Image (spheres, rainbow, N blue to C red):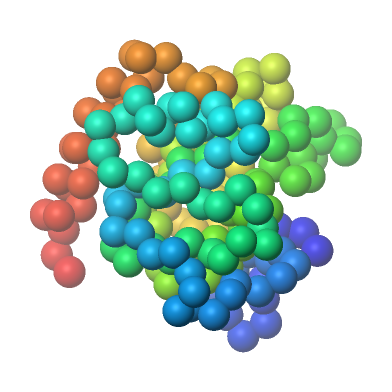
Length: 178
């Protein structure tokens, strides 16, 4: 099934559009839990993880294996993720598999989807129009802003901008009425 498939019964209200991927999360009592305001996924290459390590904030990693128990967020967070793939089947068409399956599994948990507040995309400019496509897809599905985009594992300047931007973002979020 494709990323755009809505799981029956989940509705399509803001922030609740389900993403679909095979498998179901393990029982909640066995799932890792995080209070971090930055949740990230990094592939085996570790590029996105290296970027997350440059940031001055607590973060939590979505498990690499889809068979692992799903991470459960307990507070609002920003999602940091890479884009997979980079070629579209036809010109102008979205790349298949741009959003990692592990991220789809994480966002298929309704409570995780409800807590996402923004997304940061990592990508490769060699992907052309599909650069950071995963962040754009998550932004549209979850109705949250793309806060930043960077190439590969990012530079120290990217990390400084993201650190400052996240501080400002969370300050602004805390001032919004509940």
